Image 1 (cartoon, rainbow, N blue to C red):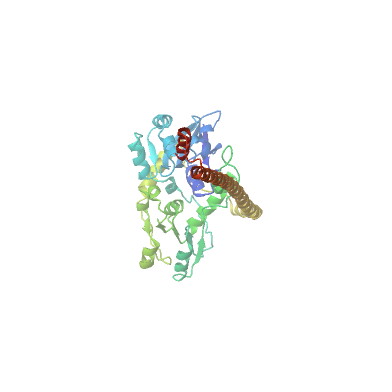
Image 2: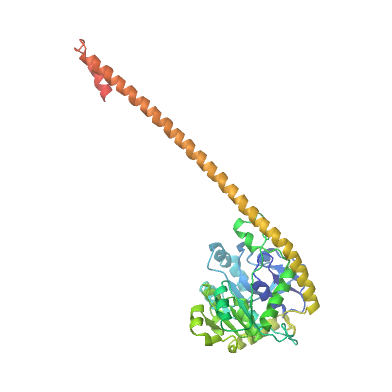
Length: 414
């Protein structure tokens, strides 16, 4: 039997790798990596057992997956809030047949459960697989006993300024998104709007960086975040955590956020004692039943639970690998900004060409209108001349107009 692990070549959000790291704990070995947005084209000599947790689908054409993947459908979230083609892919006849073939769909949030059940797809709530993360047998201190706080939020300046007035502890600001690049992850020409979703790192490098993030979360004295896959691993590691659910992502948090201490920044400012970073409260134990059920289901599927769940890299390997990544990142970051500036320049040139073309079309149209106006003026002058000639003829000695001539005059007037 072979075992596969979902990888994410197309995105910069390390939360995806964290979900796969959680799945990796239950694999005896990783025989192959399966690209998340190319599930339909995966091929192998044997069927590959794969825990299919996480977010689906960003690329509608990649769903449903290849029949070479033997899946455990668990802790899944289906993106139903944006593009209709994604919903169409999930609810296609082929997709429904796939779901029926592989049993009930385990969902990490209640929104996905309700969406699937409402569309005659059998689904149930499992919670998120990152709740099963574990330190393993060893938990070396990352900071040699020095306490530090992690703030992992998109808008962190205000909260960090607020915390600096409350504590002397070190505060680390963490980003789960990485530096993007222009590497093409999808076949064919990549749309311009997608350039910032692709990654300049290999899958293995991203897994390594995600492991380092987990190590930071695990060893922190406490964590404040608006990231789901920072908050839930903190529960698993028993690291005190508070969730700021202010990014309008109710669908993804439905059924999960109740496991966490949740607040808004405004509320936290008024009631700081709810999460005093110098003496943070312990997390709720509500997640433990979900964790236990997830571990049982995954172990039943693969027959394996590893002790060291998220990393078996030694400290020296961490230092060496980090140095390599950082040195390469310095070079590629410079190139990235060159590419961004070039893209901006190309778009400006393209826009200018479009505007110049429109200006030429408008000028051509104005010229035609001007020509038509001149022609109308000529016609008016001709008519005025003819009218004067008729008046002159009427006033002349030949006033006794014959009947045919009167008819001509009257027809002209008409």
